[in-house]
Length: 139
Image (cartoon, rainbow, N blue to C red; front, top):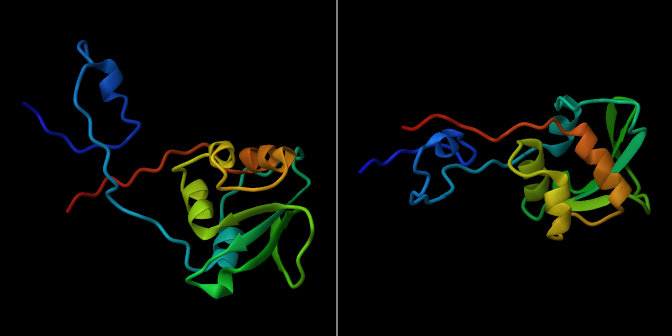
């Protein structure tokens, strides 16, 4: 019998000759963006000409300073003083999950965590690097 703590996407399971194992997934840590404006301005987006502009309407019930509309345009992020009718609506938990690589925008859109036009979701998919959430520190 072996017990190992690893991450959700560990390729070890695929490499086993007998892959019938009991696997239990439990959250080990959580992430929370405290200052959305600063975080978005410093995030390493994968800028491309395919996305000219994207608007995000963000809700945060525990940190009201994060509430608002953010425009991503010309490799810059700006928090707007007034709302715009178009854009994607999501909460801080959804934003955190996406930007830290835990879930992709299209997956969150499918389950109703993001509301908006599919074209905007495709733009967000382009902007966010395809990384896997991983924190390999057990203490």
